[in-house]
Length: 193
Image 1 (spheres, rainbow, N blue to C red):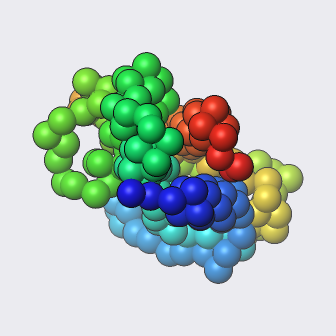
Image 2 (image 1 turned 30 degrees about the vertical axis):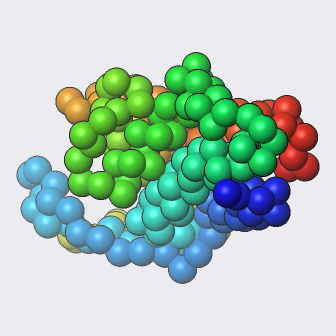
């Protein structure tokens, strides 16, 4: 059985992770990619978090957002309520269903079951650096270096993709709305979130 404190602590953890996700400044990253017609290219980015670190933060967020389901189910008996109430909420909320698929696909290599019925997963992070956030762009033979001077101006997007690789949504937005759905439900239960 979960306590009010445990549920509220989990909401606080989720808020800390959400705050970390929106902070894009960091030491940067370097990676290589094969570019047709140009061969192997090196990409260097400085002044912002690495794309992989941002993906890690978002995967962590998805797992903890989805963990709220189990915490709330464990808490409901203390109120004399049926834990299946939480499952009914998830079944009625498309964003929570996407959160389930994102969390479960982050934890397991393949989804055996899917709350959405579409076996969704997170794609690869995309980021846009507007000119106003760009300190310098240097193109050398076989290398591109991007120096970000204003990381708060970088826009990130994590696509939600179906098994065919088609983008069907934005994970960041589904996670945000999933947290809001859990907060509303917790407030209905009388929890101070």
